Length: 479
Image (cartoon, rainbow, N blue to C red; front, side, top):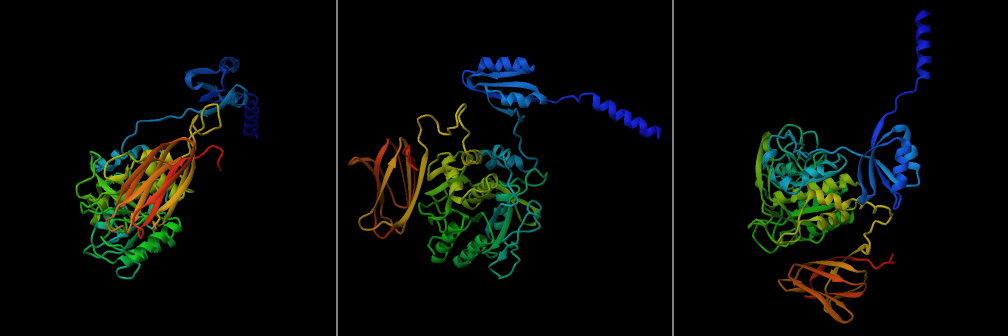
């Protein structure tokens, strides 16, 4: 009984003593012209000012938790936020990390500070299968299929698929092997190539459809051939129509023509670039983008290897696409492709440039509002609009009418079936030619436009098919 009374007395005393408040380091954004009011508020609340950025109308203060609510409610204060800690971006602890120049070149460590992937994001690897006992991949696979032997065991008897999968998603910071691009993404192994690395286009088409139906967000095809195949074209369109992003290697023929399926309009094509941001001489040109073509990655039997070629470059883009889908799960493939294209570092030989993981993630996220304003558009700049059109050029060509704001217009035309004949893009305004661009399989036109109506004309071989992607400043007031 005595012990119970002592506990009761102690609890009563504790109830009379105020608990210590916890202090927090806060960023305080104040409204225009309110600097003096904020200073008086900080003095009244007894806050300690740690730093000030007057150009941005921001004070950094130490505040007791009891004062935070009053601080936030003050009319002079626009917003408050915790002042978060940052640290130097160090590479993962995987033993082969020092040899991995590819993720460093594409600023993957900075991207990993935002996300290292999500197990809900599945990347299908359509290839020679995969070694399920590879320690950097084990435990992170979803069920796949072997389209060569017709069974559910897509074991790799060549090594190419295991290498591709490691570039995409080898576990990072686990003190073994290498770090892939999307550490926590899961891999769906689909075997379409035999032990000699050969296979049939129809099996690739079957695998693309299978991956799409099984929920893969990204499908990597580090394979190809010089001739277009009807089943493969249909499968690529099937994937695109159902929200799967198909990424393919451009080919290693030192050619200006892309291999298939990379040459298809529904596919993100990838060439191989070196440490100097130039295409390797073996890489086919004209791809949508480039990525580092040499990666240290996983090998059969638990080993590791250097992997060179456009087959090595494509999974870099697939891995970064996996990061994008992980960061913003509601993204559409079109939004992910746009983020990859807009953030690419310009280099020669490809349409958009060399992929950059950090910039792509930043491009996908919405821009923060300007201080003191809810408008997310920079003063004087028009929001952008996008347009995608496809079909056959026809005897009279194709003409598209645009109502634009002031800014930059970029048109990209991918052409198939031109038989080496040139295709042309022409931008007109008020009856005058503003800009022109021409090419055989890929045409890109850039122009600075003013507010007004423009006509974009596609001309070339009547029987050629095309896909036109257009980004331009939206006319203010337009829906």
